[in-house]
Length: 522
Image (cartoon, rainbow, N blue to C red; front, side, top):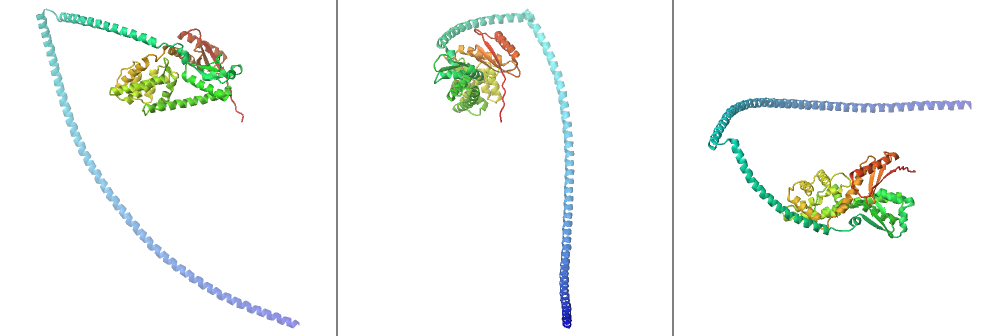
């Protein structure tokens, strides 16, 4: 058994050795094959590398040849360009030298001519002096001869001549004076008849009160109490914000808004109507509605100005001037609406200019803008003539327009047909019977002056004349003016009104100082 096991083990060992040797032999054969293949590939790569290197050398030589060729061409071109520039410079130098030579010759010739003229002028001056001396000597000889022949001196002859001229002129002056006296008598009679006709045609009782108030209809008299508010809080807010006088009396279902300023009164009337329609009448709501109405009025003013410009066929008018044209609806002169007067003048001037051979469009333009300064008289100091000329000059309006602004009040001469047509149309519109009321104008002027006096004081925010000019309410800046200074300010305003104005009765000056603090809860 042991022998068999030994025999089996020996056979197994022998078989394993034989297998190992056979495997090693096969691996060695495969390795030789791999080595030969690798050597073949390496040889192929080496051949390919040599081919690429040879090609690279050839390409490098080609690039080098092309670069050398380009360099040679660039050098040749640069040398040629340098040669051309050198030749041009040489040519310019020759031309400059020739020009310089010619200019020197011309300058030398000019100097010779000037010197010749100077010598000639000096000779002529000496000859002229000699002629003047000869003339004076001969004039003296002639004077002596005339004096000896006439038997009088030159001064005596002059006196006699002046006496004769004076006698003749005295007769002409006397004739002129008699003619002027006769014309003055005729004009005086004509002017007297005109004044009488104007006075009778312009009579209108209570005209100012009709033009200075507006009525607001109420559906119920109980609304009057709501408009007044608790302790008069609402009506005080309304009057302070809108700058008008609100009259609440026994007239049923009616309250009255009074102010000399047409624009301010129109805004106040519309604000009250919206508040009554809304039903919420309180200070905060009043301010909100008033601001809304003010914005709407500004937009409507601009639209109305644009419509007027379009209807008149005009163009190229600055937007600010267009807005001022719309604002004329809320201005009046001696009771005559400024916009109606302006449109009347524009149409009349256009017709007259066309009849006289002028430019009707330019005449209408000048007629429309001749009183444009009245749109600014409530906001700026100065006459409407100066304000209108200033604003038209600022926005580059035609010279005819500016001439018409000055000429229609006699402050400048009429320099064109269109300007003459505007002046004639203005006189026709303003002077026709019943067109204007001087009583209203004097009242408006007085209350405007009251507001201006108060507004010019330091620390004043707003000033409104109310109660038909019998009271002025002054709203001051609470930061700049304290309670003690408010008293002093009221006295200063009252004193200046007393010293500079004439008015019936008395004027109450109320200075209002309000501190308002606003904060938001977020």
